[in-house]
Length: 270
Image (cartoon, rainbow, N blue to C red; front, side, top):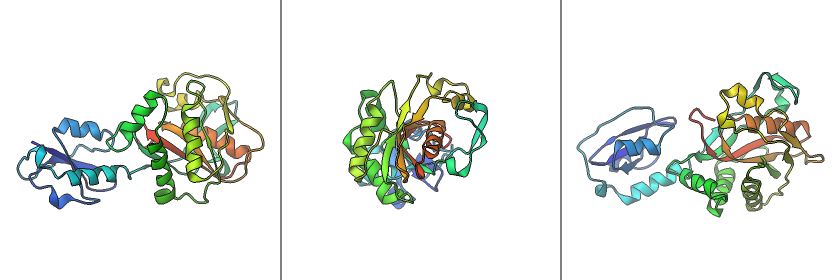
């Protein structure tokens, strides 16, 4: 028996099995075969909406057209996600930065993009492997560059690149951002410093605590360009990190800040 995952609109997927997958070829109707429903759910943990559609008779996995699987993988690898900027700071969360309530429009991050969901069947597996190994491969640099230049095309166009720094893994994102900048033909500047260590964001009990955890953590160097900038990070979850760093960059004189990341670990859009 072979199960399939079929995209039926911009937010969800059917899962079921069928004897004839051919009519579903091509976006937005495509299918990819798996040996079990559990395997299919595991590959699409955040976008499946629990709808089981059974069509026709069961078929063997060997009957699935390999070309169909390749087209499905290509579709997944071109299905990046939008990073929606946070606009409101919880009361008392960012006392050191003096930010509270609704952020002024001039301090907001622009809507950004993330290449994939953590561990998914498109780019997610490679992102997961590389984060654990300590270096992101050139294939991911190319994938993010193509996402930016061919499909996203942020406006106004970014004129330089910076990144969210890490004291625990200082070269991981920095090295990726440098190579991405070179691939895009843009200058890279390490404009942001992390000035103190903090507990991991994932260990915070809720969103307000995640925001408070970042108070006073980052500083922006003087003399940064006043033009639009790409802000690179490896993972996006709560979106508080890119929100805080983007506001600091804007206060320091940068142009619009466009967040871009490799993976999204949350299941609710970041």
